[in-house]
Image 1: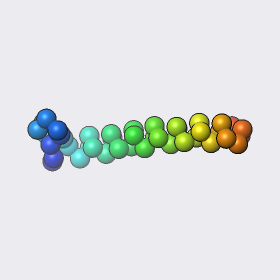
Image 2: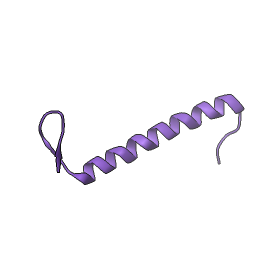
Image 3: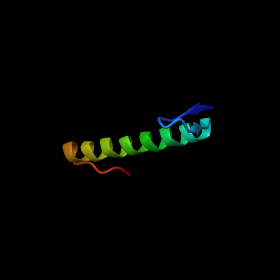
Image 4: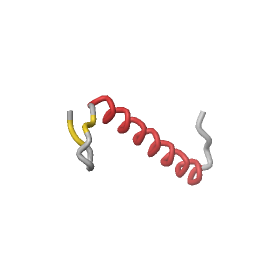
Length: 43
């Protein structure tokens, strides 16, 4: 287990869930940009 910036414990599960959420959010942003550039809409 690690700690956050405030010294509170953070489990590996919490860390992995956060990383997956951030990855999905950034993928969504990239997809929106790609749609604006090439005009194709994802399936």
